[in-house]
Image (cartoon, rainbow, N blue to C red):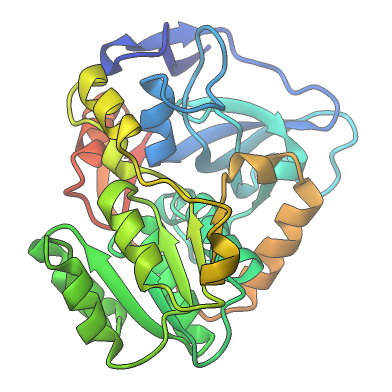
Length: 337
């Protein structure tokens, strides 16, 4: 038997319930993993609350990444064997003590990495790399603005951008997180407030802003796009401003935000000569070969180990989700099974 947190119906965190379930057996091409650590993501919260387009219909187990040990393998699996320490990604299903998964989405845990570090790596690293280089076309000498820079994606994005020789500006929502960005080596740090455009202009010091990684939405999206120079690219991979801190969405507030959200006029984009691109990591899940190719490129970069900010035990997983949605966490939030 296994234990898993299953959402009986999307809409509220209260529907996230711990269930005892039959242990799934690996089919041909699959492996059974005993999960040691689970990585939490904002996409989990949106899925639980029914605000994520990729959310499965009906009851489902959230969770996109994990690390653990191979228990058994299905027919045809050659690169993995029982006892191997691994990390992996899954299109939901990660909030569990055991998971059966297509072996293509499982890789060996790097030497000297803990399970917590393994569970903090795949989603953040892939998101940061794909947004910066595949979409943003970041080059040496460019200036890049990275929002939520103290989070899992933001920390990796900053490291990758500096590795590429870019000038990095990181933003955070609280002055309590400044120390994290200073330690990470961001050239300029901005605490977002009503004076954000002025602070950004001062941080650029006459430089052109060529790339923006945006995950907040609303006013910050609009102001970031306005600050982008011609030929610049804004890559958006989330809308944290639509997240609510309660158990269920505040639908009236969400409707108001939706109606008054910034709108991009495609007729004006050629005039401004700017690009806006959206990115959903779930899309990469259908491209296993591309995912492995990107992971190899990431492995060639000197970006160090993931930064695990907070850990919770498995019985406290709902509290971990609540902490993540508060916006007060730094680095990666990990649940240990």
